Image 1: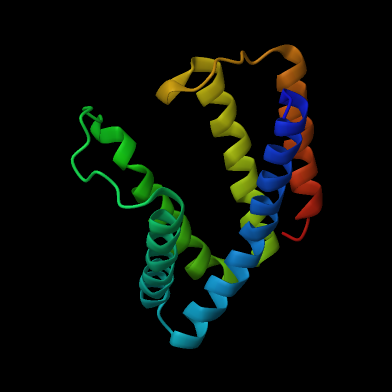
Image 2: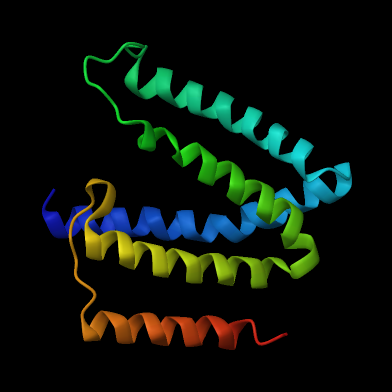
Length: 152
């Protein structure tokens, strides 16, 4: 497969992942509201996700080596903090603030953080400078986010 075809597939998969974020938010918020506990809902969601991840791991990659030969810096494990923060916040705030509002602000946060991560090549990412064109795109995206949620 050529690079263009691979990039199209990657883009499509990530688009579908993006479509799933508001769906996940609505489902998580609904579960938290029905259980009257966003924290319990988050635990249930992570247990379900854990089992799916284990099944995927064993099916696709097989039994992993639990003791890798490479040293992994601690910051790479902190992604779990962001996963739980997002899950708890969307589960608690989504039903009160609106899933659309919540996801739009998540999107705005993603745009800002990805631009800074790329610009400074943080955490081993490829370096893409914040040019005037990119800054303008971010500004237009931010304006678009605020126009979409113009409910305040």
